[in-house]
Length: 140
Ligand SMILES: NC(=O)c1ccc[n+]([C@@H]2O[C@H](COP(=O)([O-])OP(=O)(O)OC[C@H]3O[C@@H](n4cnc5c(N)ncnc54)[C@H](OP(=O)(O)O)[C@@H]3O)[C@@H](O)[C@H]2O)c1
Image 1: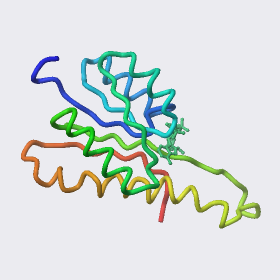
Image 2: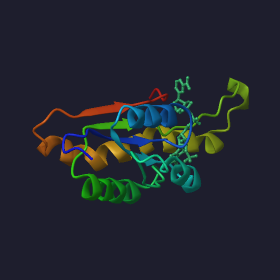
Image 3: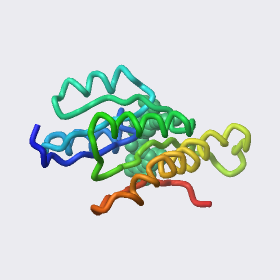
Image 4: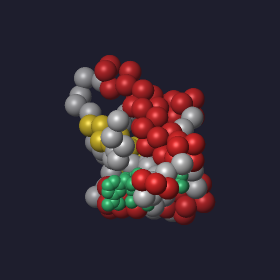
């Protein structure tokens, strides 16, 4: 591994946008930390020498914080956080059940905030420019 190898943390990396982003960055030579709940998929992905698995449920703040700390310990630094964990529950207005729908806010809104708050202090202290991208499909 070169000393200058760039590093990225991708959440929601077990499928969809997050997985595509993780695999693209790995292909470009970046060191990639991948997070999601489905550990077996992350383990499969980490057969790529540039991909490292850090299972995570974003709805749990302590889990987000300790996962980011583990990544920093292992990687030393992070250049980009790409937060892609998300879910959706499309319904016609008449069919929406507020109680059942709360998990969407829990993952998309609070899950993203949990990740942002977990990395905030690191970003503030870091002198180099760092990028934080969120895929966010909740309007509040
Ligand atoms: N695809 C699009 O064109 C598009 C456009 C606009 C917005 N969006 C939104 O962007 C988000 C991602 O889209 P996608 O197409 O990539 O969806 P996807 O294929 O379903 O991927 C969602 C990812 O989020 C992870 N995830 C879900 N709940 C989680 C949790 N509690 N903790 C950690 N990870 C969790 C899933 O992994 P695990 O199940 O393994 O945890 C999976 O890796 C969704 O909210 C979607 O609605 C998508």
